[in-house]
Image (cartoon, rainbow, N blue to C red; front, side):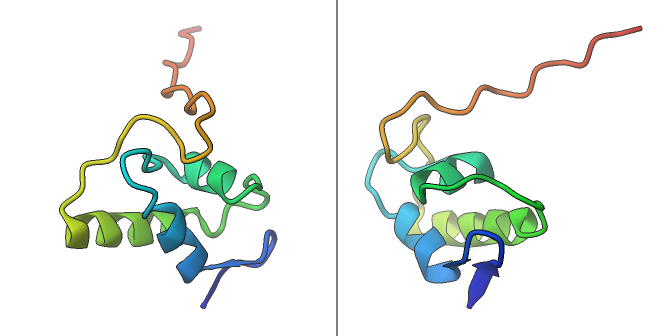
Length: 83
């Protein structure tokens, strides 16, 4: 099924990005990066996360900290400044 209409990738594409051995993406941003694209409208992020959770649960795999492209991983969420 098509997961992302903006970048045109499927659930199979997401699952294949998750089956790269020890360099499994941990975030939706890393999945986009592994697929050679970036988030556009963001509507698919929840579906990608659900696919990630299902795939990792089924395989019993703990996610690694880097992406399949061996590029610096997406930085963790920084705290918002207090005003």
